[in-house]
Amino acid sequence: RRLGDFAAGTIVIREGEDIRLQNVRVPESSLPASSVYSTYTTPNPQPMISTPIRPDPLPGVSLRDVTHEDLRLIRELLARVHRREIAWDRGQELATRMAYAVASRMGHDFREWQQRGWEPLVFLESLLNAKDARGE
Image (cartoon, rainbow, N blue to C red; front, side):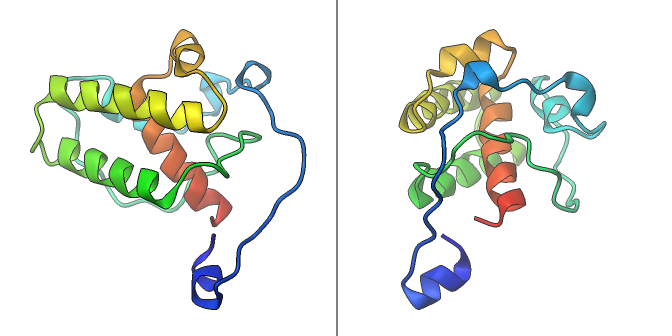
């Protein structure tokens, strides 16, 4: 739902075929140089820098079953990890649990994402970036 939909009490319904993870390929070369991947692959992440909205990092992946509560919790977790209010290992543990839950709600098994090299924190931030890129 977009902000205008909240105000009007309406929802946006999109029809179409759900795309399964095994059909989605995102070449590493398509990730921007300042990719979130570099932020979350080391135990000492760099602070986030405000940048313009990037292209949708999850094209073709349906996010319609990701709830507002999911997004709120993801934002909170990412912010606390960035501020180092949560120990790195604990942040990874929480992100893993959250990634499995959200991927399941999306109709996916997060193990498939991990087999393709997605780390939990990268996956969660990609969900937020995809929502922003789509204006949802």
